[in-house]
Length: 299
Image 1: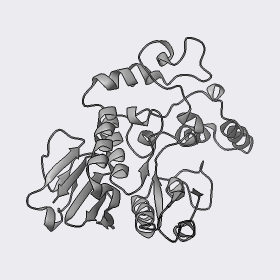
Image 2: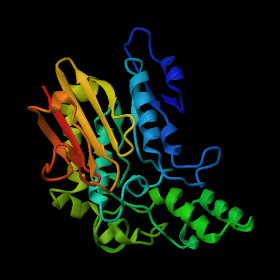
Image 3: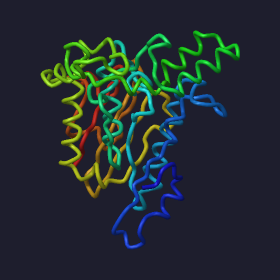
């Protein structure tokens, strides 16, 4: 495994005979919503062009050399649907869109506990947090004159405790996590967002993840296909193709809460198969609704 590698250094870890590939955990994309030259607590909006550039670099430069680890979340990172999605009106759509984007890429997708349910960040009073990094940050910045409201907004956005709240199993007390007192407060939205509810809802984020995983098992183009970024200068759309022989996969993701017009690649203008979408229908082939995602197959 190669932690924090560059595409060039990762290649040094792969065996010359091609019998084994290094698995690379790169973290370049997770700092794209912080101010340049500062730390993770100094927030700025995500630059989608930079996200496309970074993820595409790792897709293309490691091809045949090393193996990508695909992730949005882990125990140190805020919940992705709150971070780069929309955890309000479009929580379900944006969580599915973000899942689609990663699961169409080459590499091994990691699904962090609760990500498949669309679990969200929390907004607690400072005394309810447990993470020592977060508590030290609060003490230091307040003592140095930062407005408390500004400090708390950074904590709400980036605090590690966002990923460490109890797993939301069901709508019973403490989200079914424990009959005792949990080490940290349960997210108050557990009565609506929980595993039991998701399992019984055929249109849930959970079932969408299951379908994405099954598609990866059924279509070798997702595993082995060459990656190509489309519309690199489009500030709303993240789109790419995967190509293996005569088989081509197209992934389209609208990253924002507005309608985005675009022009389908010419080879996809005719017959194609819609493998998955986070909307129940396709209203327009040349426009994506808020956070809409589609995956097409051309054979």
